[in-house]
Length: 152
Image (cartoon, rainbow, N blue to C red; front, side, top):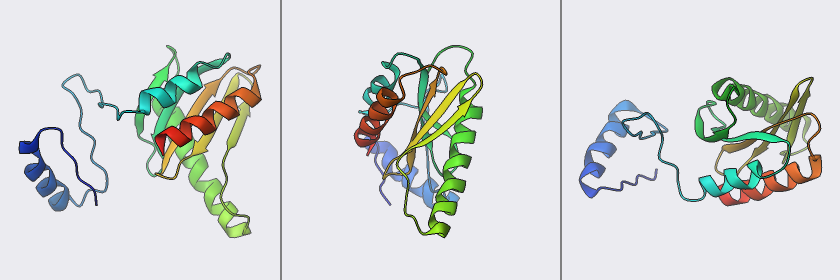
């Protein structure tokens, strides 16, 4: 387990809390309810959202569907799409493992009003793009894969 703290005095109580709670993931938030992003998270989201036709991007915990970081246009239901992306990733991962074809690098989900694109990272974070139906598929895929490398 890796535990880091910006302020040294918070490290001991944080470690104690994580052990007592049996927590696997702890997110710290500001008083405004925002999660301070790791360096690189903003860059990863910028790579995806700069593509024409992309309406937003998120970094999502693949395990539980919690939004880690996001850049979404108004009106996009981030938490619902994050839950959908995590569920999709979990189910497809299990199915692909059962089929013996190995892991996947890219999952598109096309709908009438747009598309959801999901790329898993080695760290378990999902890079998710929400796009219009007529986006440039090649560019979205390329930037999602680049963003996944940035996230790690």
